[in-house]
Image 1 (spheres, rainbow, N blue to C red):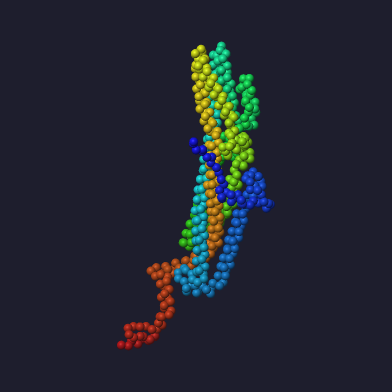
Image 2: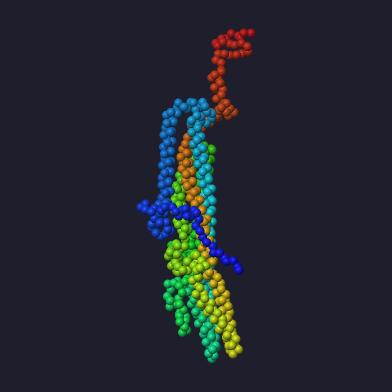
Length: 537
């Protein structure tokens, strides 16, 4: 006995359940349910409140930065008033442009804080690149599944249209000719008319696959000229395949079209991916040039990077707000996607809920809603085949002129049966349900993971830029001013072969160990000042 094919299932991940469990408050600070209802204003309010947390964090960051700037300004004034007494001691204990004592320790601490903040920013950039790649992979899997589902629906419509056009061609052409040839033979004429009636019934049944349930029931029997009771209108309709081109104004078509959704997602994903890449490159350039400015002690470069760091700070907190709202809304959808699809008017406006439930769950306990339609069509095609076989055996020997028309009808019937078997396979829930599960895995697994990593990147980069903006003013104070650099360059230009340290040592030694100017050694004797007497022998 062959093994049964298991139907793939979807289970929300741990991250989805954790984000879905977050409390929801509206603008009036009232608790709300966490059901995914994107068109509801109450649900939109909960997302706004969650996004506003990043705005509050931005305000706190600004307050911290402003407090540090005030602290540095006050410390600078205090250093100017008290620094005259400590300046001489610092100069004696230091060499070159360095600093000694407490001032040197403070400058070293500020510099290392800046370097640590830049390192944290680089780590956040790495996390952001990984999260951007994961989110792109998830959206790519989602769009691929939607395009595959759209191809399946297009194949269904193509098979139905080809089958209908073939049967209509047989009704209008060879069957009409056979009726004219069998006018004198009533049994053969009855069989030919039965073939026409059955073909019209199959056309009516297959037409219901491409019509909405709100269609008028009179259209079902417009081509039925026999005295038999009319065929009952069947409401099951598979999800329709709307054109893949986005409608004017970007409005979602009704009923829902997988092709339109895939094209819209691909366009938006391209812009999203490119925006994050540019933001990550901006952060990376700012971090690298800050390190270069600290190494070269280029004050103008650090001033420029400070301006860009302010821009990156605002972008980081802003992206965190958008990512928070997106993560929460995606987790709400991924917790119970079937309920949203069944209750949404965009999905069920042209499709019955039974058909949607059949394709979404694909349970073995559920019968196909197209079972009655397919069974009636199969029986009708089998009856047509039986009548044509009877005419082939009995009528052709008596009316050989009908052979050409009979062969044409048989050829059309064979093509129709082949299309019908393919149609039965495509209408089974396995294919479309697999595409549905794959799309959920792409969005709720890789896409959700990528969004969480992007949120972590935004948070870490915002903290890093906050620390950078707090520490850079302190790093500026460690740099020599332009006047000090100019004086050093003038003193060094006097003797390019003697270093600044070498010039300081003779000067200091001359003050401690040099003899008075009136001691003038010449050989073994000495000459007193202001004396012209010759030296002693």
